[in-house]
Length: 382
Image (cartoon, rainbow, N blue to C red; front, side):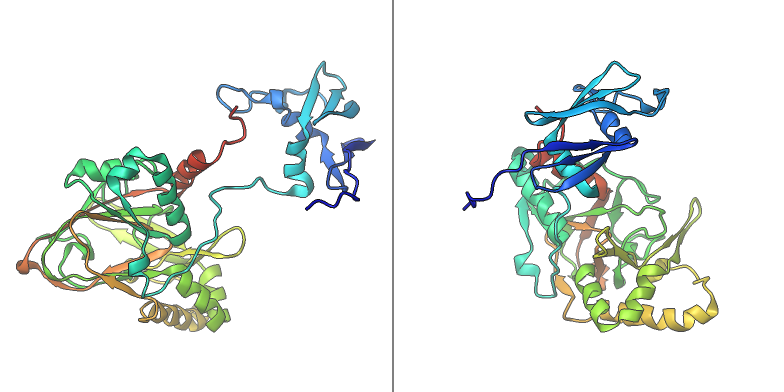
């Protein structure tokens, strides 16, 4: 209930300065706004058609200075020196950015860590409903942002079905393996995944400067003996590692290490942090792969501490507490955050049946963009 004894604060301009102005907003606080910022973000500076800034502040011959400023209704009104222009700045824009606050991002959701017993609770979505229902598609992407792992059921048994599903999030992103990849036993494999052997927990394509963010694995057939899928939530493991081994966590989140992927037609190399932190300092994911880790060309004295921490963390990833195990079924597609979820596979007997997965990637930034467009009105929509 509102406290009726507290009077509403009417926004008022307090003072005009040489480089900006002070205004008291509805929160009762006085906030400073720079003239360049006010002129550059005048609503008339943006095209209502393209929603891009059409005003070019580089072309101002003198620094913007306000001749006069007042509050009229729900806007700050400014008249500018050396320019026949009036700005009506909505007060809610000022409230949004007062004090250097950042604009709210609907896709900046809190991640929920999960553990080895998570399989029954994995969010599941039917592919035909994702195609036809935007609300379901938004819920699917929200589950990806929060949990990092989902299962899409009722997949069409076709190459086109995977493309259609991935494009519900964003454009399919090629890697040095191609636009799509087929996981089955190869006679001359170029990757451990293309054998029947065990595949250790890892994130994909760490040798790329910007590894793709979302991976899709469409199970077309799985009738072999063995081949159990293994998944662990890197956020859950790294959060616990931070509490268990603060010094080791600091090394893995602050010292980048080299990765490589080399074959006849490519030689990819990058340096990555094993533990990835977001803008809030929270764990957002991992980059780790034993079979694509390059020779650690770090100072040998640093390696005295780094290697033991790296090994402690690698062993922790494989603890039963964190490892989710299950057999993929034909007609399912695993969609997961390749910068958060480490995945692997138990060995299987190739001659015992058929095992065929088809995969591709979408960038995380495109997934977030799609989610924002589905759940928010944006800044310029009418």
